[in-house]
Image 1 (cartoon, rainbow, N blue to C red):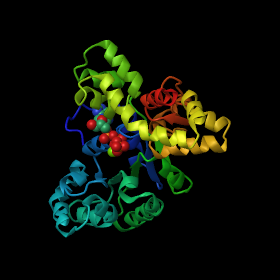
Image 2: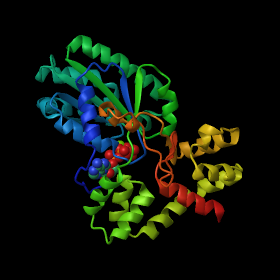
Image 3: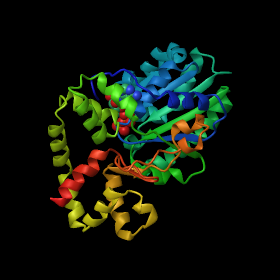
Amino acid sequence: MMSIETKFINRELEIEALRKLAYRDFSNVLYIYGPEGCGKTRLLREFINEFDGIGIYIDALERENMESAILLSPLARKAKDMLITLAEQVTGPVGRWLCTEILSLVERISLKVQLQDRGLVIMVDDVTRALGLDEIEHYIKWLYELRWRIAKEYRPKFVLIIATTSEGYSLSRVIRHTYNVANLLWNLNRDASIKLMLQLDPPSMHAIDSVWRLTGGNPRRIIEIATIFQWDIERWLTRLELELRSLVRIIKAEQLVHEVMQLIEDPDILDRQPTHKLERAYRILLESNLMMYSGLMLLSSWIEEDKSKWKLKADEELGIGEYYAWQIPAYKQVLCRLLKG
Ligand SMILES: Nc1ncnc2c1ncn2[C@@H]1O[C@H](COP(=O)(O)OP(=O)(O)OP(=O)(O)O)[C@@H](O)[C@H]1O
Ligand SMILES: [Mg+2]
């Protein structure tokens, strides 16, 4: 996607949480949910690269290249060539195919590496976009059942299965089942965002501050502003405005301007005073990936003793409420400007 590879920043708590979950009997599917570009893929890949058990990462969206569709932990790499040859059998998109062939992957790995007494982690990245909303519910159920089959047939010490998505709308389909645990991964915090920006030749402290306020620490947006837009924030905002224009048309046509303005002011209005029109406005913003439900436990909560840190902290300026949030603050700022104009 983005050609530049930034130095991996922060996320110590999340890596530790994943490690902790990999070494216990976690029988549910862990569903990681977070804003587009917040760093889900990067986190999973960094984890797999360091994991000392058997780790399999699948990029469900990869269409052609088997080498980029699958990433193995160091211990599992002995089986890599064998897995790559699997690609010869694949006719459609390779990532999607891998999603359904997890059992054959495990089987092939088991021929090269002893699975017994080891931790096994299987990560399927971007499931909703790859499989579509209609299939996601079944697929997650299937993953859950797969976990038991793998545990029985290959007897690893532990099995952890993780799926990720940024599609807010998929959450409602997944969260209601008892075989899932959904966790939130949010954008980078302020310190980490500044560290990331310092890698990218920022022109001034002022620019760093503006980019933090606009992106709320979303690493993909930060990198985009710094590289593609060469820190020209005005140009980046103008592009965003042009992209959101058609959405503004829909909001106006649906007569939901007032409700969207309410959500801009305070996303939690939806929780406190739900109305039919607010629901409709939220639904449009959810489906366009501008807002999402943020009331889940954070992934990092698994290793936090301090209860006040189990959930994302509300922040008015960033557009984060207790339960609902804007994926990045720039969306609410740009929408506000367009709706008023
Ligand atoms: N902790 C981090 N440190 C440095 N760079 C990061 C970090 N997290 C993410 N990035 C970079 O930010 C960009 C977006 O991250 P990534 O692709 O992981 O997001 P994502 O949440 O998987 O997005 P999507 O929702 O589209 O799948 C990538 O270029 C990635 O390398
Ligand atoms: Mg991703």
